[in-house]
Structures are given as C-alpha cells and as structure tokens.
Amino acid sequence: MSSRDRLTEAMAELLWERGYAATSPRDVMARAGVGQGSMYHHFSGKHDLAVEALATVTGDLTGASSVLDGDGSPLERMKRYLSVPRPGTQGCPVGRMTQDPQVVRDAELITIVADAFDVVLDRWEQAITAAVAVGELPTSTVPADLARTLAAVLQGGYVLARAKGEQGPMDAAIRGAICLLDAAHAAADAHADADADADH
Image 1 (spheres, one colour):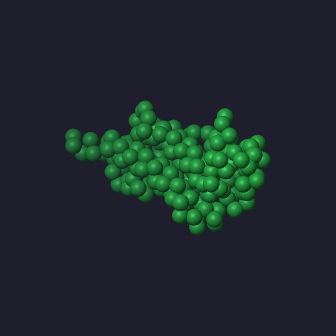
Image 2: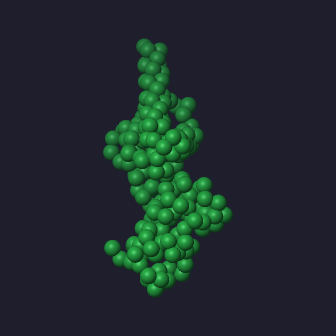
Image 3: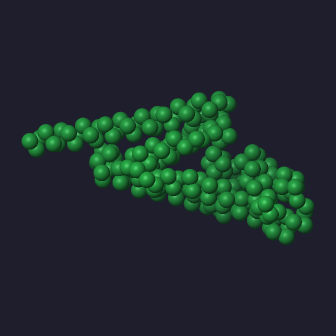
C-alpha cells in the first residue's frame, strides 16, 4: 500500500474512532506509519486529507447500496440490502460524521456526507418505485417517504446498538424493517386478490 493510501486509510479510521476535531495530523502519521514529509507531499493538510478519506468512506457506503440495483425482484433486493451484515456497535462511519460539529460546519466535508446519503436514498426510491409498479408494495406507498424511513431505521439501529454496547438492537431494527416490508407486501397481495375477485 502506498504512503498516500496508508494516510487515507488511517484518517478514515481515526475519523470513525475519534471524529474530526480530535484527530491531529500527528495522530494520522503515527497510525499510517509515515513521516511528515510523506504527509505534506500528498496532502496540503488535515482538511485536504479528510476530504479524501471521507470520499473513500462514502464510496464504501454507496457501493454497498448497489445491492438495491442488483438481481431479483425489487422487494428481494431491498430485503437483501437490509440484511447486509452491519457491525452496530461500531456505528456507521458516514452517519457518525453528522454528529461531528466541525464536519457539519465545514461545507465541503458535510456535502460529501450529504451527497452519499442522497445516492443511497435515490437507490432506495428507485427500488421502492419498482416494487410498487410490480405490485409488491401498495400503490399508496410514497417512495421518498419509505426510503427515508428505511434509511432512518438503519441509522437508528447503529445508535441503539452503540448505546447498549451490543449488536442486538441493530439486528432487531433490521428484522423490524423487513417485517414491515413483508406486511406491506401482504397488504398489496390482499388488495390485488380483492380486485381480482371484484372483476369476476
């Protein structure tokens, strides 16, 4: 791994563990095992490095959400994405940044975070819209609202798991979200069956 990559990885880890304010360039260099010359050869300073590290971390988030565009029916894809293993007690490395006052006040950093969530929400909305179109979810479903509800369930699962110091709350939140989708699917099926009976 190049010194640039080591610095980026170290910054990403420290942002997750400590937050932006509590992470110094010296901390990053120590974690990466590189000297000051390498640090300032690749990056103008802490902010420049944080921008690249955040872009890498958010890329992981948006990459994982590509499951929503994958194989299977829309509902299957949504349930598969919800079921991706998530270490709840570690927290979401992207969501965590919204709790860092310095990140929130920094227009460039918070835009990276917000844009990543927009990508994920857009994929949720597309999958939900497709599920409604094929009758897997009720026609009364508002894709934008449900997308944000499901994203909030995942972020809330991280918060609850960290508060308890155990994985259980995250797993329970995911099971609950899947249960809600299954209930909505059953309601859509029942409505379709009622319509079919009425036509006869």
